[in-house]
Image 1: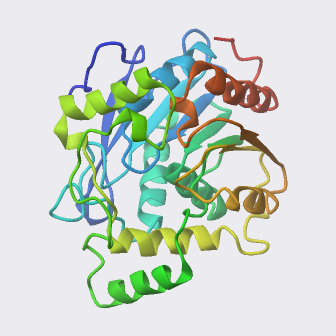
Image 2 (image 1 turned 180 degrees about the vertical axis):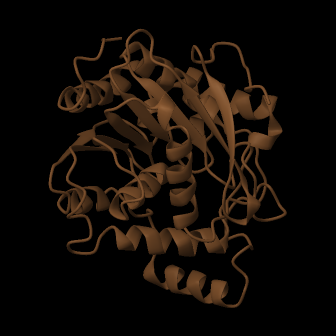
Length: 314
């Protein structure tokens, strides 16, 4: 299957599409691409909920220019990967261990395309999955950068978590969570909670209009329960002591979707973490204006300089 194309979103040079089969026979889509010039390592890009490989083409081209090979994944249940429920608009996981295992399997099968050192770059839900994969030793990385990671969900109360777990116990995990959108509709830029950059916002929306199978609506009750389990596991004392690699945690100053308070709390549990806040940024820091993105990239370059041999600058 060819990559989804829209003007101004060039495919990273040398990109290849791969497919693997995860638990339950779910087909999972992965992309790899080599560095521009001699490789100084590879970056594992872990997108957020509702996101997909094509949304990160710009990010991956920038990484290639820095001397990195790149890897990106459509998590099961979104992008063009397979679903576990009949309604393809439902964002659903049975457990966050499923995408963790999909990621570990893909990295193992494609290891020859991922030169070391290997660095994680994870956004939002991808940050929860990537840190869970490191916590459980399912993958090994040399460093990791987290953009607005979902280590807690803004406004999600303990009573809602208990309700979700109870509904899952009744076999109702595949139903939409109460109050969420049940259809996808093109998002109005003026009211969007993720970026101040009109062009990047339009590009992301345009990709879904071009390929409607990329669309995703709200999460299921099962996803809420699984997310609660995963995020709580990351905040237990001593739970991250084995994650000894250098870590960058970037919070968005105008965050509306994830719980920013979880970022310094989790960072304090990591042996070697730097936490920064990008003032003025909304949730999708890597889809923000050039000036705000530049702050993240500067911190990312500082991180990678610790583990990668002098990557070429963009």
